[in-house]
Length: 219
Image 1: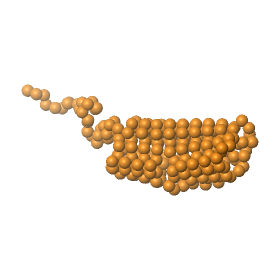
Image 2: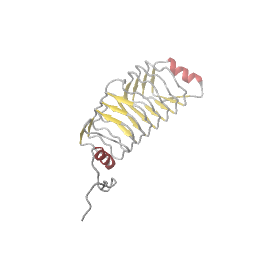
Image 3: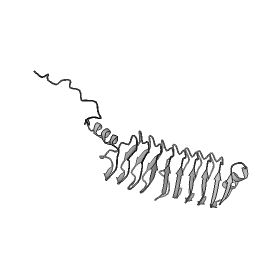
Image 4: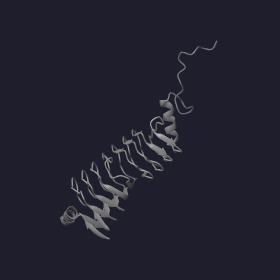
């Protein structure tokens, strides 16, 4: 596997100029606001690269790894993601809704706050130990997906199929059964407690005692 390091401008220029890359590692490249459309990457690794606001329209990533990169506000219009793994990367504010259909990708130890995922089939997805605050998850098939260890505070799930989806060990997950399809969905106790509270119930030992104001005093 060849390696392209950001120490030389030629490496960046070659990445911008050529269209097909196989078995390459791109390290420490500054590709902020770069035009990366209509390119194909096969078994490539991006490591410690600056990819903020980069544009990937109609590109293909297959069997690739994005590790330790800043991809904040990148534009992923119609990008095809096949067996792509994002590790320890910053992926804030990305709209993933227009990526190619039937994507295969996963997130590990990454930041995904303020992202949007809409209208996708994302079965068996992995969101492991991520920070995904205030994310919109709308009209998704998340069957058999795994969110273990992820912070979902302020995130919205609506119109999602959550069959056998694993939310154990998550923080801040609020899953409304009135607006999502839940079956054999694994959730932490605090999610159940929060849902009960929104339905007007108090779970003994978890909510403050209901005020007794207005009750008749015992004679």
